[in-house]
Amino acid sequence: DQQVKQNSPSLSVQEGRISILNCDYTNSMFDYFLWYKKYPAEGPTFLISISSIKDKNEDGRFTVFLNKSAKHLSLHIVPSQPGDSAVYFCAASPSNTDKLIFGTGTRLQVFP
Amino acid sequence: NAGVTQTPKFRILKIGQSMTLQCTQDMNHNYMYWYRQDPGMGLKLIYYSVGAGITDKGEVPNGYNVSRSTTEDFPLRLELAAPSQTSVYFCASIPSFANTGELFFGEGSRLTVL
Image 1 (cartoon, each protein chain N blue to C red):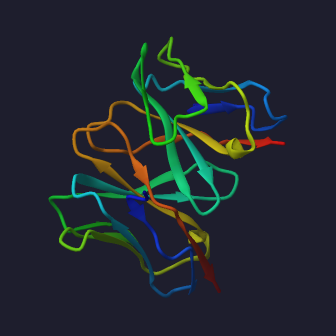
Image 2: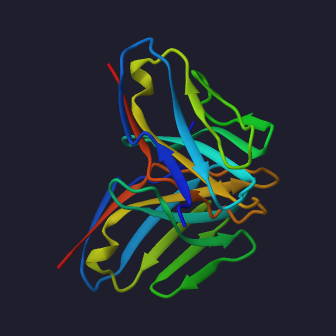
Image 3: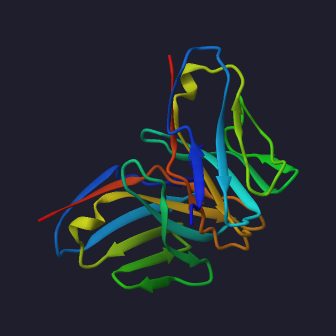
């Protein structure tokens, strides 16, 4: 039972354009959402997060949008750079728990 | 600053063998986690600990055991290795959860069971 789903296994975007990565969740008890970035042979690193009381959070080139009614969040990267090429995981935390549930990941490739 | 250190980085096991994946962190974090990453399946939580002497099961605990005798160390034990345990294992830590979820991950341990 995959509670956090990333339905696009891969995405290819030209440098300078916008990258949009999507994530859907099923558990209405999730109240905190995060995006992690992972390069090959490295552990994931935290990128950006959003609380369920907000619908948008921005950090430089990265913006996360949350649509609670649709149980959907997205990560926008503008402008995309070749160094953004990595696997991106969305993750969610059920309220009153101490753990994160991860999605399946989307491999982003930014080409020149 | 070492952060989260995992050993070994690579290991090949035969079916039925046992081994321990080591994880240590030098950030004095209370919370520690073990995840496994299978191709196309994302990261699955195996076990976690909110402090020394306290452990709890995650999504996929079967076939694994953990202990947390110190704040720094959180070893993961495989008692009878099976091919289904071929995966990349990640250890992570955080000072306290408090709904921030910003885990610090180790570099991973790639385990192959033949």
